[in-house]
Length: 358
Image (cartoon, rainbow, N blue to C red):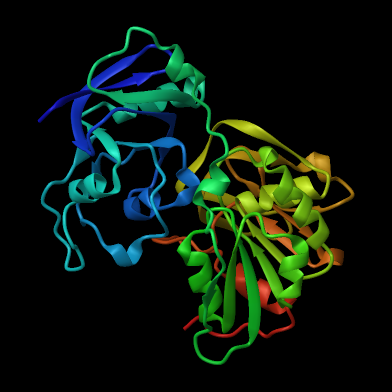
């Protein structure tokens, strides 16, 4: 195996072995805590511009399954403790290494992912580089910034998906980097779905006569998407809206709120979210490095969910404007599915009666 190095922006170097595509790559280093779902992680457009580290020590043991992909991979690198070369699963179509090569994703294995995670938790998210030679000058690594990624991962032309069974509603999904699970959850509930690019105007969306609008997940700093925020501001109050992840953040900004960058964010399939109007705590999948400052929307939107670990905003609602948003992923694949009922809540907001998921 070829020697490789993971060089952190703080100067620490971790030697390991190269896997995946050839070539060096710089990105924002983040960790995700999921024990399964590495395929969904690697194909989630929300990771655009980032090098992803898996905290679970063995990755690739069930191989590659294209039916589980969420979208086109946008990660800049992949870091694991051990990559399984011989997957064992009846659905497997080949080893993870082959996928990384085909997708052009440089990776490194054999490094102490536990120690690297501790560094990020203590010092905060930082840039890193996967490389064959340790660079003498670390300034190019430190200067790297995730910018302009939403236009990169959004679809370029509208896409249409038929409802499963009887068509009950027409939903427009604004694609800021949408995961495929969002469309699947809507179609299963009898929705015909039109996916539109991130720069689609509010007027164009309303001209499609949708029963509701879904604002998708996506990568990067929400505040830099000023054009998207402006269009959302023109949609709020005119049509039922459900926002997820970046869609949640953009809606908050459109309503006059503010966002902040978190120290190391929430990424993984085990994030606890508390319903502040009930007694339930849900286990959720999340992938975000920014959060909405709930206090900035006092009197404008109601806080609905908070993170049970750090108290950060996980959901907002503005009933008078038929709009609600969540920071987590109710469409999560490979799970958990604790909060998929939110799609039924969206159906009810559009005037329908929730029915079996099928």
